[in-house]
Amino acid sequence: MTTSSPAAAPPHHEREVLGWDQFGAASRELATDVLASGFVPEVVVAIARGGLLLAGSIAYALGVKNCGALNVEFYTGVGTRLPEPIMRPPLLDEAALDGKRVLLVDDVSDSGRTLAMVDELLLASGAEVRTVVLYTKPGTLHEPHYTWRRTSRWIDFPWSVLPPVEAPAAEGADAGSSGAGAGE
Image: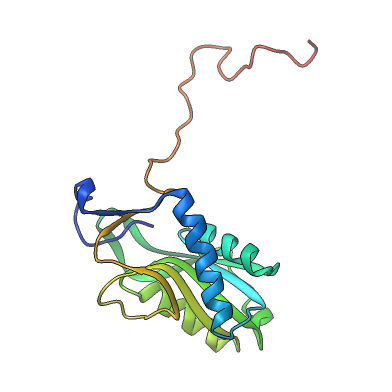
C-alpha cells in the first residue's frame, strides 16, 4: 500500500525506497524480534494486500504454516481513502482463531486505523494478538508491537511501485497465439 498524505507522490529524493533484498532482510529481522520478545505465533494473518508478502515471508522465517488473510480496503488511490476501513470478502474464519496466538501483519501503520480495526476484531474472536509492520508513521493511532523502521516519508514498496500490468491489445485474429498449435 502506498501512503496517504500528499495528493500526488513526492519527488524520489523525498521517499523511503524499499528494495527486494532489503525486504528479505527486514522480514527476517522482524521474525527474530517476534521470537526474542517471547511471542511464538500459531497463526500469521495478513492484512491484504499490503501485508500479504510480508506475512508470507515472516511465516516462513518463523516456521509457521497456518496463515490467513483479511481483505481490508481503506486507501483507494494516491492521497485518497474511504471515511473508514471496510472488510471485503472473502472473510477470515475468526472462530478458528479463538485461543490462538496470532501475528497480525501489514506493510505500514500510517493512520493506524486499519491495523486497529483488525486487531480489535481478532481480539474479540478470542485470539492473543501481536501486530507487526515494516514501517510506522508518526501520529499512527495504533502502535504496532514490532516495527522495522519509522518514517514520515512516502514509501515505495517493491511490489506496488509499478502500475498494474495490462493485457496487450489484440492485433488481429491470431492475438494471444504463441505460434505453436496444439497438434504441432
